[in-house]
Length: 141
Image 1 (cartoon, rainbow, N blue to C red):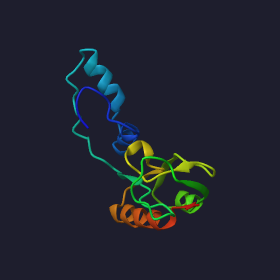
Image 2: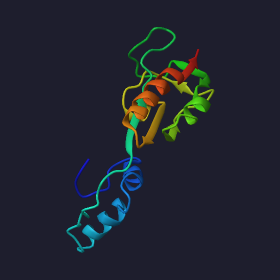
Image 3: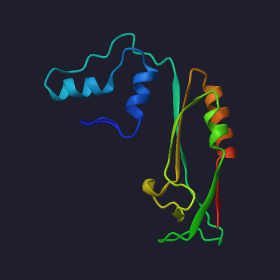
């Protein structure tokens, strides 16, 4: 995302942590206040890499793959403790809890789980992203 607003989600927070001395919100405010253009320092180099993962619900216990109404109940959420222990774990957002009614993911709002990973080693990010996908599981009925 680019333009006259701060990019969505936690991207600005991640950028601030990935690039020492860079403050995306401050830069946006300065630009809006007419104190721009924003000067990008020569030292603008990421020291970390990040990935934002979406965990859509693609099929329900009934076998449904397309629905406009929730058709399953979350009984348990598996893998969060193990995901939080991954070397590149940064943070997550869980949109459901046991007892939540869910349907097949249709859009970003109906996505049950988001995960942000950050690490200096891209290979570690790839390994942790793969592991997180294997670990996270919603038990549905």
